[in-house]
Image 1: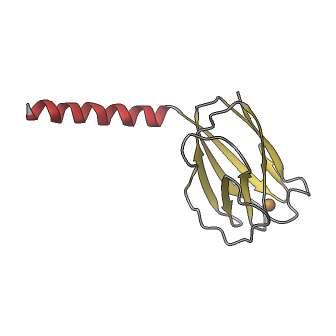
Image 2: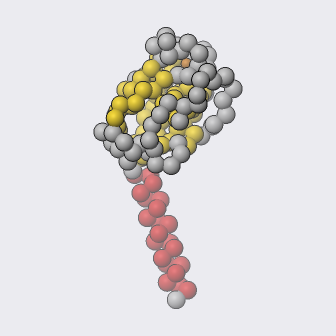
Image 3: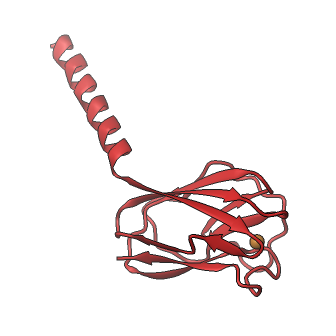
Length: 135
Ligand SMILES: [Cu+2]
């Protein structure tokens, strides 16, 4: 009986590992003054999404979405951010200093078009916006 339990645990662990690695859609997004590249990301609802951001600019930038329904809380690899935020805190927010990478993982649940922007004062106004399309 004990052996059967060990076997079950082993099988469940293997299953969890294989689904986690295969069902995530990954994007690499570069940030500069004042844009995202690419600036449009298209995903399916209930699909786990990983966005790797790389700041190729000379000042701090971030990848933010003000409101987006997600399953669970978005996970940010490095949640520390030194900059001041103007206005309410976005639901999805990953920042990076010049030359630095960061990663945010989330699972959007509702189809729609969501605005990606940089929260740092003045950046959005200078065109630092993009689109996340959830189908
Ligand atoms: Cu910015």
